[in-house]
Image (cartoon, rainbow, N blue to C red; front, side):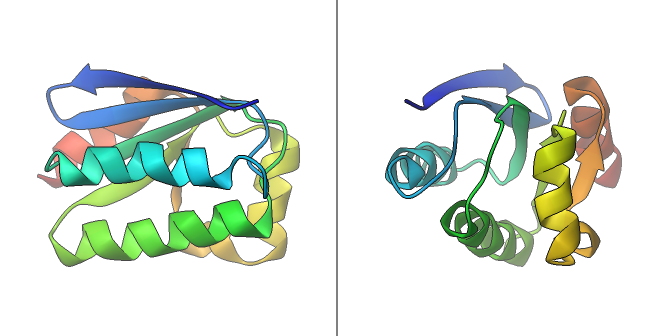
Length: 115
C-alpha cells in the first residue's frame, strides 16, 4: 500500500510518500505527482523517508517528471532518501540527475534559492 500526502511550502509543494514504489503502486505515485503538476506547481520535493524500495518503473516516473518541470523552469528534489533506495539511484548513475537532501527544509530552501 502506498500513501501520499501533499504539504505546502511557499516555494514548493512537498509530496510525502510512504510505502514501496513498485509495479503495483506506480500508478498512484504518478497520479500524485501529476496532480501537483496539473495544479501548476513546478517546484517539487519528494519526501522518501518512508520508502524502503523503488522499482525501475518508479524511477522512470521521476525521470519523466524532472524533465517536464525543468523545461518550465522548475525542479524536483528528493529528500530523506533511505540508504537502500539511494543505492538504487547510485547504481544507475541517477545521482547526477537529481539533488538529494537530508531534510525536507533543506530541499525547500534549495528550490527557493534557485528562484
